[in-house]
Image (cartoon, rainbow, N blue to C red; front, side, top):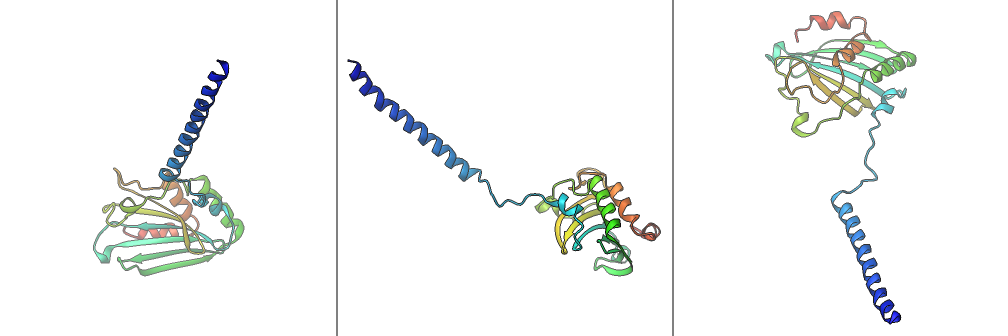
Length: 199
């Protein structure tokens, strides 16, 4: 009798084990198909890139004014690299250059600047996609601020915000005034020049 019971229990146990293994395999397969993990998925390296002192790194601050007539439309960009600091002002939607100031920079100065940007949250936030990242016509009565981190002139991260209220705060997740002031102070003439621009 005991041998009869054991001969029935062993096949049942094997069936249960095989069923459990099959279920586990199906669950794993389902996860792989519906929730694939991409080993080559790009890690956000913006923080490391920002504080890197590589000569091909740069940071920019772009301001776009109100949507008005072409003759009255103004914008400007401040670009800081380890070797240069530039402020360029434009008029019109075709970016006709009005003025450009170009100054030298050095590594210790750039280092202090990018660490200040980092502490102020320069790369805080996630880039938006699709229509959510379309800046055409947005905040028509105010200003649009864009903050970009580049390596060899290739964009690593670009975040934006506006001076308009409502759902127009964009992708930047920190105080834009602090960042703006840091950029303006990198070029001695910037405050007076940009204050004269009708934005």
